Length: 125
Image 1 (cartoon, rainbow, N blue to C red):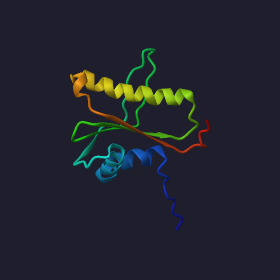
Image 2 (tube, one colour):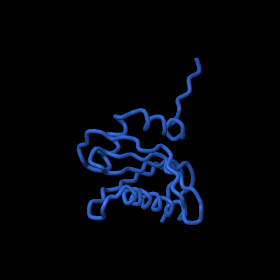
Image 3 (cartoon, rainbow, N blue to C red):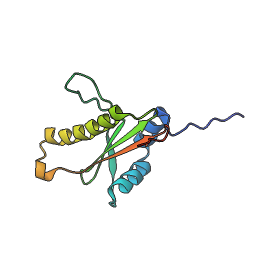
Image 4 (cartoon, rainbow, N blue to C red):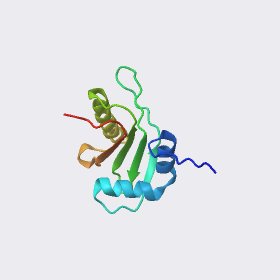
């Protein structure tokens, strides 16, 4: 029988694993935060915050732990240029904006952690 293993870097498997595996979410969030966490929930598997010019940005997976910390997990299956790096920063800012929209005061802002899983060629300089 010819079996094919689906690579983690395929969008479908990446989304499926993070949406349906609480253990994987917990492991990633604990690694990024350095905290021992109880739960990490998916708050959105595709957020489309609007950009000032009307362009839509797609955040792959947005997570929130039981302490209120936010996590953005991205899969980048292509070249990363200055534009992609700027886009990742915009994603993080949109997660801060999400807290403001929920009424969180600046002094009570929770940390935002980002993980970019990059499958392309090494980035130089």
